[in-house]
Image (cartoon, rainbow, N blue to C red):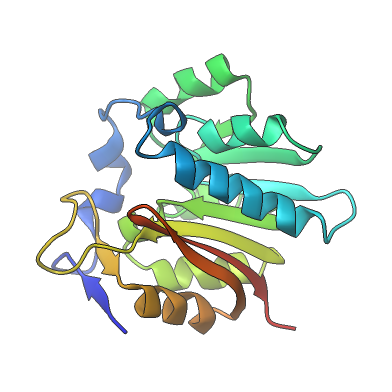
Length: 201
């Protein structure tokens, strides 16, 4: 089981608002490579929501709102998101989803403004963070369910240059379980691995 740290020093530059300030919007839900993992993430959200009364969903790192738009099409859940990349705001308006421009993983003042749902989503987020274990522990203290995805095919020698970490499936499971979650489902969707987990009781 392996997690590879892909950056030097204490802070991953790819995790910072500065790095993302001028990046182009990535409409993943409209891209054939990404659409299946977002559909699977939406399925996992609905599985968790079925166990709750009046379920709520917080999407941390919601991008241009693709997953939030999928959740609008299924059974009713109240969902909102957060992202710090300025170009993504255009997607929120076009998709008519509720999202807020906050650096929830990098700025303590912004972190204090986060409203957590019963279910928290971090799709294609953990591999970008300086400290994914700390982020998961924070989520575990505030939400009952987690839906997460990251690539499963990357390693120290073969990875996206924008990623701070790479995880094989056992390493990803260890990361999530170490934060206090019990994994309910962990499966691949193309090059991505998706997890539905619940806080240990």
